[in-house]
Image 1 (cartoon, rainbow, N blue to C red):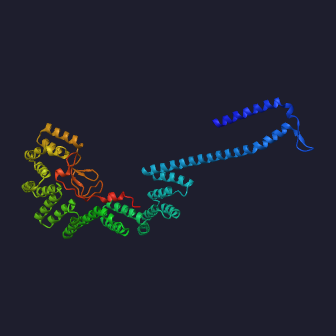
Image 2: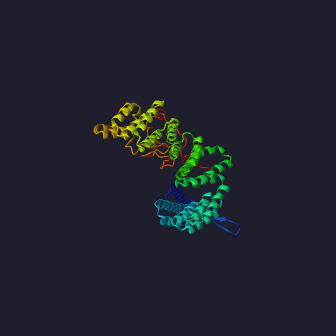
Length: 468
């Protein structure tokens, strides 16, 4: 019982007791006649009672009505709250089922949500998507058509409609819908284009990705956002590089070199383009020019990837002495010889010249003490020499610095590790970010002589932008 109700009852009892007491004390007075007119009278207590009722009943009626209305409103709110919580629970279960790939159960939960609120935007959007994933493209299309009538300005629904038509085998209609999004909703259209482009990049569909990239840049220019075009430079250069790769695979070496020169003109430190340009020169039979390109790449970027490629070239041609001589020349000409000396030590290790490798690498301990790759290489050399104690010590140093090394190369964009150098990180899709793993703790890129190449997977960053 509420305190206010209790006090009201207590006050009523007090009033009753007081009235009873006063009535007993004035019983003679109360039975006297009270004249209403010449011929009409009633006892005084009847007149008092009538006056009391006339003043009390209206107030009580208003108060009672107000209380009943409040109770009914509260009951309605509690009912709506229960229904909302039930819908929310069903929606959450549907999301969980969808995440687990249980499309049938997700559809059932969403159907129950729509039964209560048939015009709910989020439920319609997700229900259609679930139906499409079940292979029910026709039903999905019907749901999203109904949603588009209710919410004609929703880009999300138009995007789902395009996906429905694609699943239905009508890519032309899907393309028309996406063109409408780009035309009628410039900001949202930019986001949709970037999402489509990123999907094509993820599937290595370079031609289609290039077409979409041109649309993205054109839309930025049309919307007076020319400054944002520079944010697309990484994607643009990466796609130009991939077109050069396709040309090389088709034995179009001249076209390959032309495209690569265009890339390098825009970004002289684009490592994959320099590596591929050397490969193109090799295919043309110009070994000297290929080596010169890779030497120039090392001078410009400081990346040891070029030295590794030179090593591979000479070892593949069974010319290890030329590889050693080339690295000695690089060391002599380098202002910062840390990476070139490490590459020489690594070359000696590859050639099973372990004593020479240790003579090069051990004096570098202070400079490379924080690099796990350095300790990993020392451990392998000691292991090959049968020096198990020293090998274990070097492995432990590697573990202390960076954990057990799963690869000698690391992506600067996402930190994924790789067992060999790659022109494009397959973990995050970045170009020109996979490098020999030296950049650990206090050992900076500048101390190693590495130049920071600017071209990364800008498309990954741009896909997270909200281009409203």
